[in-house]
Image (cartoon, rainbow, N blue to C red; front, side, top):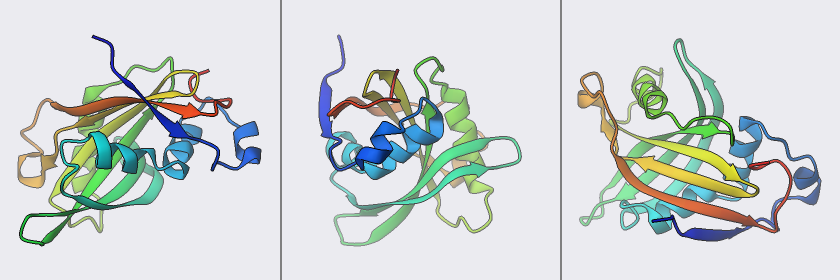
Length: 174
């Protein structure tokens, strides 16, 4: 069965930016951030959607000793009792010709827990892959807890969706 395709507007992306669109991962991350694709996914398609109350982009291109994380986000969730919890989401961006690698997403999630200044106990690994002109495939994996990180050997898909950016523009998936 083929995944449904959800449309996201791209008219809010500055025309000058769209004209300079590239095929590289930093451009994909910039598009994800400017068009709030991660926020849309977590709010609409994620299994966590009922708890997510805020998503903030923290940083791009975080270089660690053994891995590089394309983007970090802070996700604020609220439980039924009204208590909020902070979660780090690490995003791996992949071009059309790149493989979507679960082991890379797992390495990145584990690396987050070793970062100075990260006190959060949960990480959500996520992969964003350009799959066709102006189409992005998002795969959110089940969250990883700090106490389970070192013994975890595989990730489980929690949600996935395909997003089409309209109007289409150069760079994404070309």
